[in-house]
Amino acid sequence: MDERRAKHIVAPPRPLWAAAAVLGLVLLLPAASAAAQSLGGGTSSMDRQTRSARQHDFTYLRSTGEVRRFVDLGLLVPVSSNSNFRIKAVSFPYARAEVKLFIDRLGGQYRRACGEELVVTSLTRPRSRQPTNASTRSVHPTGMAVDLRRSNDRRCRAWLEDVLLYLEGQGVLEATRERRPPHYHVAVFPKQYSAYVDQITRQAQAPASAPATEESTGTHRIRRGETLWAIAQRYGTSVSRLRQLNSIRSSKILAGQTLTVPLGR
Image (cartoon, rainbow, N blue to C red; front, top):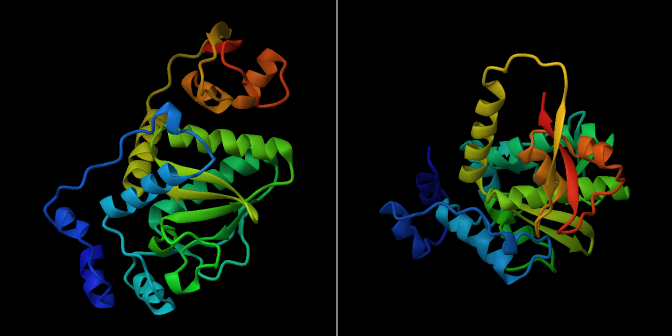
């Protein structure tokens, strides 16, 4: 059963933009510009989140009953702790399938990079269960958002922020660094994120080139807004390898610096 049919079951008010969605006039979000890549949040960040919810024709669930109904219909899926991430004090451990995919992938990468669990502190929240300090425009009631605890380990925080900024740059999510309580709010754009995962999966499954014996290196001049994570992705390497090649300990880099990068074997 699709989202539109489910809406008639739970009978929420139908917004004006839904008519455009029925007519197939919904456009996918473009990749975020370099200027938009920030964890600072703000009005423009919230605009991108709510625009994505509208483009996906998502319902803002109003009550516990509506959350349960969407779970029964398969529009929200259960999210359970595993060896890489932990669900902590989450009242409604359900999310859109693409959000679960994001948590599964990020949790494994975070565990390997930091040696600790990723902690999820919030997923789908109906409007009736929003905290008093939540924005009235929050997308948590749609099931497309997840909150991640801020680690006490500076290196883990730097790694996670690099990853979130890189994915923002790919136009597949919007992330905000929240301070009270300290956590990261992430709104995943389902269609865009699924397409991104499909693309990198196909690339990973492509036939490997013939083995070689020696790694060559080159140089990369850092541009404004770039992160070590983004540079590592560009050259098919890891952040830890870039740090090793350049004898740097943190993730902080400056525009105009020159990095040694691997070019393959």
